[in-house]
Length: 174
Image 1 (cartoon, one colour):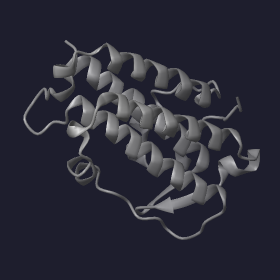
Image 2 (spheres, rainbow, N blue to C red):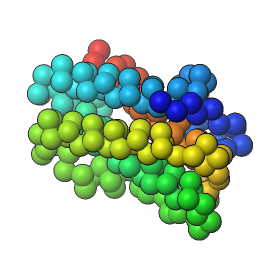
Image 3 (cartoon, helix red, strand yellow):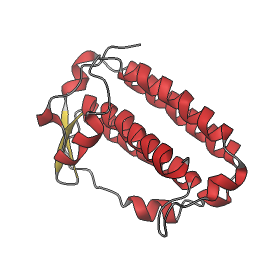
Image 4 (cartoon, one colour):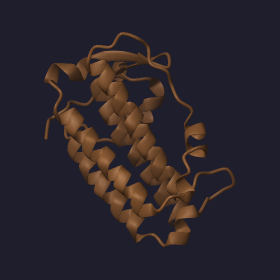
């Protein structure tokens, strides 16, 4: 898999620092996406069906909603990376993650169906980044009044997933 250097702090918005610091700076972000994907799939397959609808507090997402949120976020950030890699100069809009979760229908879906989608999206994400020319990774685009490089978006996807994996382990599986 392609080596992708970790982005500098000037390549992503400040809020993304919480995700960036979770991903090793070894250039193997695509490998980490692959490994983390397997960990997520194994974790979800190990859960009792009733646990998938658990909320650790009122208003918090269920485990199914978190998984669909990860899929949505990955799709959106990969799309942004596509646009920026192709040298898009128009600012892209943001999205409201709570609205996306509310209208996802995640809790009515079968886990295997969600995992099938998750696996397909992950495979497409890795293939996309692995196929980019090296010079594309440092291209910068704008979204939601913030700047981000293509490589920062790859690291965001990996770190965002690790962030949620930590929450799952600390809040849902104790």
